[in-house]
Figure 1 (spheres, helix red, strand yellow):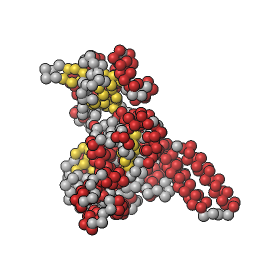
Figure 2 (cartoon, protein in one colour):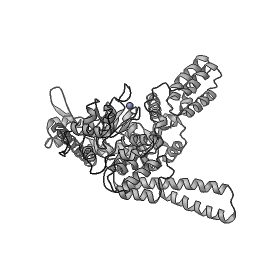
Figure 3 (cartoon, protein in one colour):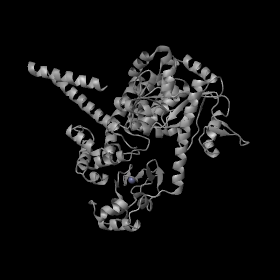
Figure 4 (tube, helix red, strand yellow):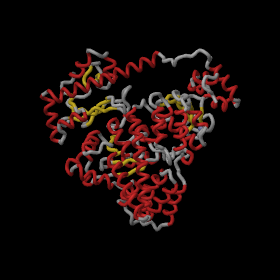
Length: 583
Ligand SMILES: [Zn+2]
């Protein structure tokens, strides 16, 4: 609609969609976008989003979405030319203005940058302590006793916070103002105003955010000091629920294997990573938080939960299962024998034993049924309790067929003859009690993280988009994917040479694809590198090879004539070799 160079295009370029929409809807910043109550349908929780960079809006509830013009057309019930005028007036158009930053925003950015730098220096300090002091030697001995050698210490940046009480403070004081030191959480202040190191006589584990910047520390007491574990508090650069430990190092492996191992703490994550499973992340706390799940879902939607088998761990496991199911994850649960946590188990039984159990980890429903079996199932009351325990999980499964399958399975496994209980289960299988935020049949939830990432790459930013589009098209890497139509529209737009406008690409799509595209464009994204693009392309190449291999296998099984069979077998070998090399 807004042709390049036209007045409409100029208005669109200059209009700030957040400001225009903000005149109709109260918006709050939420990550990279803004959120508010949808003006197009009635709702109590905000699912209407506006993306300032992409200049689009989208409602995850009713699916309405578009650019600043379609928003005004819909709100003012006017035609396109009028919408242009309205937007131009609202924005006092003509003079191009750069996006302004308020002085507060600028100050906050500077402060965050200083805090990140401070954490980097603290990390250097802690590592020096463990490597070069007497106290550090004791810490090293303790770690070695637990099987953590020098290589592991280096790999995970393990350090030591000395017992002195103000050594780090003295190290940092010269460079940073007092208020910033306290703000960082590395330094505490007592009632009299005296400052001291927060972490004393503790082994330090740096906690990095997704972009590998250290934003916090997790610390374990060296002796019997309480608490055993002490972590950084919430700070301007660290929010516990927004960070997954080890994610920065796990990204590639997550994408490659399309599956994650989820453990509780950093010590477990380190043990699992050292066992050769790099796709491990830790929630760093007893339970997984919503934002962490969202973060993880950008890389994979398949996860094996391996929390501690104690009561707290079981509760955390069950809560995490619920949350993951709501986000449409495929969940398995690994409960290690002998009530061991991953670190202990791997130390005692070895990496191989762990990998084996991990591969055999059952789907979450089997885990839950096993838990329910421990309840007294001889009485009607007991059975009722077991069913009540399981019902909420059944209801959380987004797919109706799957729900009904699990209901049958539970009834069989728990030997439920009682018609009342069976009825309760099948009722749960038919309806979902919890309110649905997203209409599943309208959202292409099957789109894999790799596809989603590539789509965001093609839709935004500069750089190597054209090259990427060419590669995807030449090798026909998106043929047969759920997102095929979206890819083909985006690739076409990229190859046309004009700047890519999400709303124009969307206009060429069917409703279902349009919604999926917008949903994907609203996922948080950071700058991407050519290596990341490369690894996504490789993932698609691999997936295509896997598809072809399955086809070849089917043809082989149809027992074709000699020469044809030879050809097929040869092709099979090639594909298997290629797949093996890609692992
Ligand atoms: Zn809506």
